[in-house]
Image (cartoon, rainbow, N blue to C red; front, side):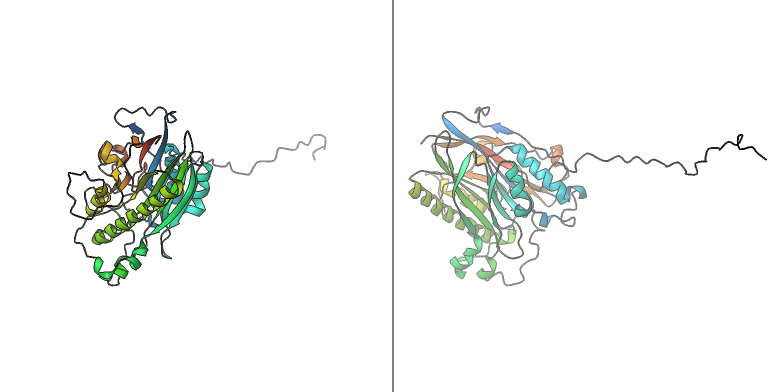
Length: 383
């Protein structure tokens, strides 16, 4: 028998097995790390100072950001799946826009305007105007974002190309056999099963545009008209795209006259967007036909507004602005109505076909859209 004075309580054994600690390394690398190029001066123009006392300088960028509603792995099998997710793409697009530091953005295929872009662009110092595509099933549209610190919105007008259904008679629409391949075969891929020879069907493509007049107040007042549009994609309906281009310029001419008369000024005019037309085709040729030299013979109808492509008159059109396996070519443009008091002083650089960031086509780990942003900086001198 043990004495209570000699009894020792042994330590209670620990019956719990030691835990196996599993270390999970969380990836901090985003799916998309945007590659944003710089603006390059035109003919030695100094772009170091954007606020010269003798003129106004502002920067405009046009970008088809690829609507998320069109982002499907089946349509973009070449793209890494992680690059197609909305969270990765939306943050990458915002990063691109922030780094470009434009005063005006003309964006196409914007389908999350109210839920995402409006508030996020506001946090970056931009206000916006937006038009959604016509039709209940069309969720994307065109937006113009601008810096109120640079420009004040004076007035705006919508452009709905479905108006052509009412304004153009059946015998004025001819079916063109001209075909070009574009990258948008997956977009609106369901062909209209109705009779495309009927202009009421053929012209109803639900495409839109928007134009606005802005007053730039410093260091002197000047009004700039900025227009943004997205023409129809289908190469088999090239005549429809031409009809849209003609309607666009007729509306722009009327709008410019309205602004000139109301404010007794000569406004500058810039037109940007995705025109789904390659350099030299009939849509492109029409858009620049109003700026033909007197010695040139114009056989077709001349545009009511003189326009020149900013890239063409400075460095030449880019080799491509859209890059997918089925199509790599130029579809996006910034047009300027030439005058003695506005000129481009720099343009946004674009990659070469063999640049590492575009190898394997777009979207990819460096570009959140199948299009590239294009841009230019302009200088306005006193009238």
